[in-house]
Image 1 (tube, rainbow, N blue to C red):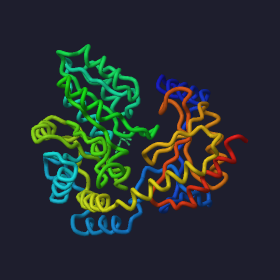
Image 2: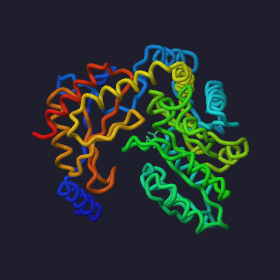
Image 3: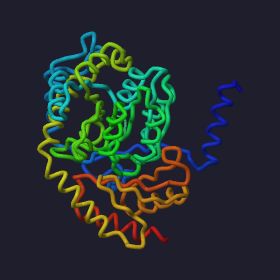
Length: 383
Ligand SMILES: *Cc1c(COP(=O)(O)O)cnc(C)c1O
């Protein structure tokens, strides 16, 4: 057996032993259901918070875009892949979110990596919330800057770290809404500290943009702050795919010159950018979707058995902490048997001993859907 085969076999065996082996499941999706093995289940595991992924207007925009601009963009943005729909979308995003510029990327993962790799050198300090997304933590570990992680949402800890580095150039990075906990970063405090230390603040608002703030502008708008760099992703509330970095004119130019994820990657299809412009419109006009989410959140909390330890969140992400991975898998399976799709999230996606059910609500759910889920959880929790 070759050495690589040995290495792979061993790693897989370890995963199995730890009870952490993961598998994809091939599903067919409709607005609020997934079809699995001929059974239709209510889907409480999607990040399509506003229900836009199946919105007829959005689908129509993508079809129109295909007719007008063709399929692929054919090149990277600095060659011939930057077209009128991309430009229009960038301008629309910049105006809506209050920045000089927006720059499109193919994914949130690459946008985060691009910013950290391009901005940081070995003289810099990078301070990240401990629970930041894998794309941020990984980029931080691989970047030449020295990275420190502050305790989750702990502004006092961040302050101590900033005080140790007074003469250094520091970048503070946090998510707006944390993807596995659904809680919000204390952005007002973090922004004040960052400014006082003459550092920069970058906010990854993958789960806040579209959902929180005036006209869905996101976590920063809600906290009344402006980050130096804002990353928004289109795979969640936008119902599509891709991401944008919002920043100053000069920072955007810097990224265009030096960000390798931007320069050496084929631009998103122009039809996708066209559809994203429509998504952006739908989000801004989508107060009713955000109001519905708030209503569903309240109903869910009310319908859960009071013996269940559940702390409600201001976002559509509702974690139900279980602790043990096997127990989380077992609950997810039992809920699935009763007609709802709820994923168990296990380490290493979340810290050790904090396996959980990650329930997400979307504007496509009905009150009955959410009450049914809560009743199901009440039934299976203490079986
Ligand atoms: C989903 C997510 C990303 C990655 O975005 P993709 O567009 O899916 O690559 C980045 N950051 C956070 C916080 C996320 O939740």
